[in-house]
Length: 334
Image 1 (cartoon, rainbow, N blue to C red):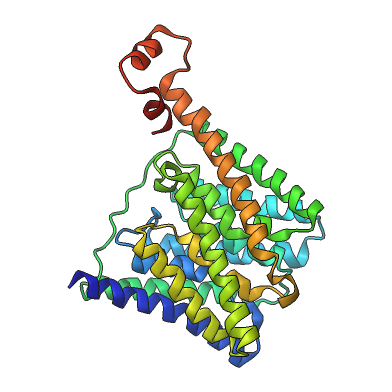
Image 2: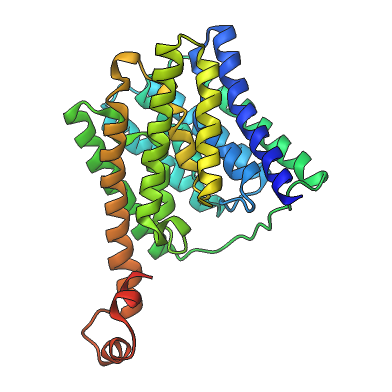
């Protein structure tokens, strides 16, 4: 019975993403495409427990803020890419801090229109509508018993530690954005990668505890999206809708089979459908480079800030006692 529930939720999430692309093709409006819909649908519908600490109302508010912030930065702020991306990231971090939530997909909603040079008001409206569709499905699934309601608890985060974390994240985003601009490889800073980076920066993040498998999931989903579009849309000359259906299904079931509740990976399988065919073959390589840079930065941050603090660094007598009675590798990495 549990398997049937899972399949129903997965199919619903896949159809939500597919419907988005279908409407985009029918209406001839590319601005409707919002790849993070795959992450929202996977996290809010398919995952047994939603990976974000947020209420439906806050989810709606935060995604709306992000959609319009990204749109206005893209259209009305004549500044270099690095400044726009940094501004969008800081806006999102500020909103998350004051709402005491971890609705990280809003980062993608704010940065995507900047790197794709969105100029239509349809983009933020699409973010609002698609988020509403996901929230409505989540509500219905809870009412009919397909999923259990999430318990939301506001956790007060120490201001100093949050400032350190946000400052580090911002510095890394700036550095990698500059690198991507210099190399003319914009998808090194693909928005879902920045979301994954932010998620791995939390001390208790499951993805942070398994960095290698998390990184491989991101790369695998990017490959799924690239190959699906090349094979189904370019070789077989089928519609983008058909390609997205395959990409969404393959990526989500990959995460299900691996028992890896990592929503940003699902978004990377849909992002190739926003890319011009000429740039498509470079996409998985740029994603791999971005994954390497972001995940390595996240690992080093956790190693020196979280693990280092817990061990008090190997200078005090208490630390030596811990090391003497335990396996040092397990102690430093967990």
